[in-house]
Length: 180
Image (cartoon, rainbow, N blue to C red):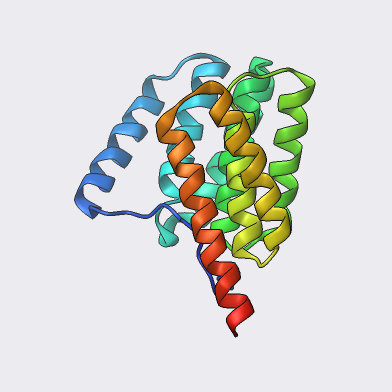
């Protein structure tokens, strides 16, 4: 699959041995998972972990699609939205821009409709990253601005700093585009 020319604040594997150990632990957890909600959570975590490896991106996507099914069966809009965001990021990493943006938007709608606390800022942050990667700078800036506003309301300094870092990278990207 084609990869975007820019990768914008993507997570990646730092220690392959540790990543493989964590992957094995998640697979073991899956064997013990019971009930739709626990399956949705565990399968979602597994898919999110697989997404970190370009060699496992298709497996990540199929795994995350399974997680959506279990979240729907559990009737948990928060888990469904979380796994939609995870799938959106995996689609982004696979180069499926439209699918990623559509999933992020759907997750945001679900979060708003069900008043799911604590996820809107994550959805907006990741949607902003996706927009930035694919050259939609104004849309990215709007997402980051709203994510920062929400994160400042909650007062989590790590998340606030993460969004400020994304904004700084976006400004560097804008400068690079205007200098060219």
